[in-house]
Length: 321
Image 1: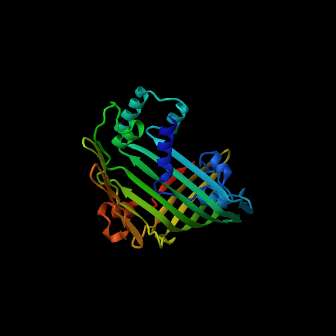
Image 2 (image 1 turned 90 degrees about the vertical axis):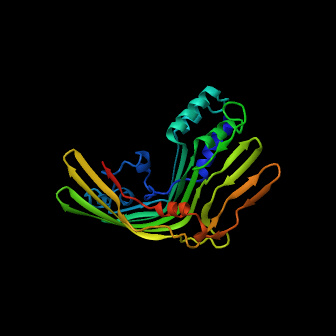
Image 3 (image 1 turned 135 degrees about the vertical axis):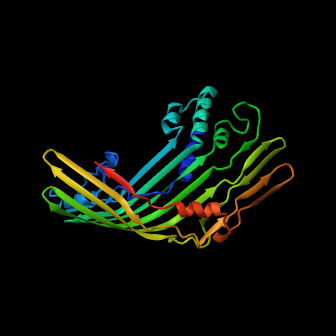
C-alpha cells in the first residue's frame, strides 16, 4: 500500500490547479480554516476582508513574520482513505470499491497549494501583503487510476488495453502585491477595498490526447502535449493583471457580521507567447522506441492546450461570516 499511496500523493504534488487567492499570513486564520471574514483585523484583513482595517479594535500597527501554508487534497479516494490502509496490503475488494467511486466521479483528482508570504503589515487603516502562491491539480481518468492501483494486469489479473485520454495536469506559480484600505463609515459599519497586482511566474498545462497501453501486442503509446516555460529562457513574467476585492463588517451588540467579494474584477491572464510547446509523444513496442519532447513555439500547440491556459483565471469568490 505504501507504493499506491506515494503514487497518488506524488502525482498531486507534481502538479496542482490554478485559482489562487492571497495566501494566509495569519496563524489564527489557518487555525480557523480561513474563517476570518468577520473577525480579521490588522495584517490578516488584507487576505480575508479589508473592512477589518476600519474596525475600532484593529491594531494601529501589526507585522507578520514570514509565513508558509500548505493545502493538499485527493478525491474521490481521499488522503484519509489512504491513511487508513498505510503499511498494509490493500485487498482487491477495497481497491474495487475505490475504482467504483473513481469511475462514478469520472476520474481521480489531486490538488496541492503552497502559499508563502514574505511581508504582511498594517499601519492604521492601511494594510500591505506581498506573497507567492504555487499549486495546481492533476486528474487521472478511470483507466489511469486502475493502472496506479493494479499495474498493467488490471483488476482482473489479466493484462488488457488501457486508454488514458483526458487525464490532465495544471501547475502554476504566481506572485501578488496587495494594498488594502479599511474605513469606518457609520456606527459599527466599516467598508474596505484591496487592490492587487498579480504576476504569473510559471505555468504548466498538459492534456492527454490519447495515450494508451495495449496487451497484445505489448505496446505503450504516449500522447501528452504540454505548455511550459522554455528551457533556456524561462523568465518570471508569463502574464500580469490587476484585481480588486471589496469587504464590509458590521459590529453590533454581541454579533459581528462580515462579507467580502474577492476579485470583483481581475484582469489577469496568462501570456503563453514566450512559453514552449512540447508534443510529448512516445511509442514503445517490440520494434519501435521513439519519442518527441522537443521544444516548439507555443503557437504550434493544439487549441485545447491554448484554451485551457486561457481559462485559468482568477475568478470572483464570495464569503460571509
